[in-house]
Length: 469
Image 1 (cartoon, rainbow, N blue to C red):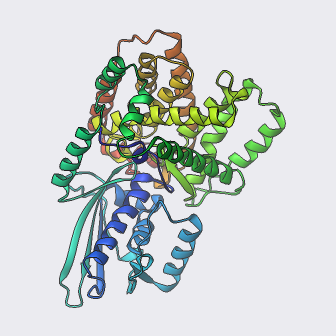
Image 2: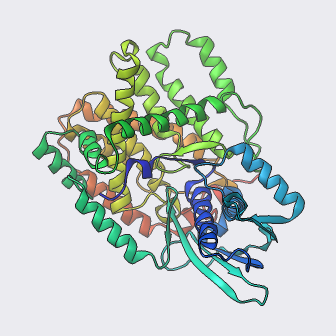
């Protein structure tokens, strides 16, 4: 296992981890390299080519503006939504880009989104989310050219870095006490050590961080999720992008606050729906969110964690330390399951459809909740398997290329699926016919067989059968 919990849960901006966060990271990496190699002064112009799914749905996903921000030297983890709005307004008004400006070595160039070259029908060899960036001098000579792929969840891969990545992977595997790529390997570690899935994940994390750093980091991630939900509850009106989708979370919250003053368990599903919608409405508006493991599925884990911290047996009697323990265990368990999807299949909607985003998040959340509700290791694995099994074949067909319809409601439905999957697993003894590894492989193969129309291209499904208005 070379993937950290802090790789799967990262802070960024909406609306998409693969189409916004990843491209911004790639453009930032490119601009940082220009600085390191002292190429800013000689750069007279830029050439940016965007391929496949990034080009097909880039407008609705904010891909092109994210690249512009990355070229200016901004990172998705650090830039605030207010800064995004400010910089984009200035760029649009001036028609100029401050190349590497946020890195302290800015150079003003005449460059706008309209100068980017889009290739929606061309897919580069490694992944459908491809982009090439080049810096050119005054004579038209290419100073440097890089090809990047945004492979889901905000992860990026650069062409030519494969050997280094392989070496880093091997080093990470060798340094961890309990490396795993499959659920079978993970369960074997649990059986031989007596550790829970969260315990195995924590032991591997401790190679690089102290227990205190891990705990503080995860609680920070959770707080960003909470802040995202709270910010959404204060913002009324319609979401950007032209579909005129009305924000529902603020109105729902007011109604629930009146109808459920004492947090009656009968209203648990309404609260779960609210949290999921709130987070994804904030994501759709370009707000600050946590990839969990992607932006398109960002509302599922916060919604199920809300259930865990408010409706688990005894939750109302927990003190802050006990609640924090629950949050940390939940996230470590969910991350361990996320590793399995990242290692054996994909969490990219552009690669395997929405089963890789919403399906993976639902599976991760189900496993985390089963852990919190007292499930055995086998029951946790069963919960994760059930959740994915009933998300197999889920397509990615956002209307207008926007992460709004059906994405926002889909998060609420998947959160409820996760809770039901955990409860079903806890009613059994952990023994079941389909293993988690088998369902992950099935998801991967289903994604390969799925038509590209249904993989974040806005060329099929709801994206073409519903009239934009």
